[in-house]
Image 1 (spheres, helix red, strand yellow):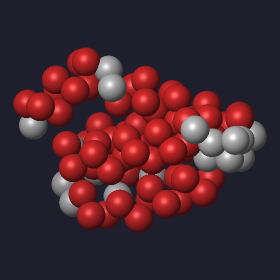
Image 2 (tube, rainbow, N blue to C red):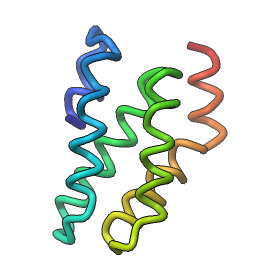
Image 3 (tube, rainbow, N blue to C red):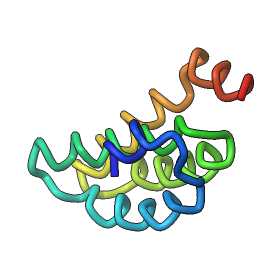
Length: 94
């Protein structure tokens, strides 16, 4: 998911929306590389377009409010990245 979000510039936004449910499901996994990969995928999807940003940010907020520590980490990491002024400025230009 993360590689597709980063490298397939021609993929339509609709291709990434089903991934958000998988990201939310996998965010509770405590394994370090899994939570980093989930965070990478969520951030990558949220950076692609304004529409995907609008879909990814609520997922990140739900994860940040989770009872599971790994999901909270993923959510907070994604919120920090997706609300970064540079990211928001780049999305506004697109």
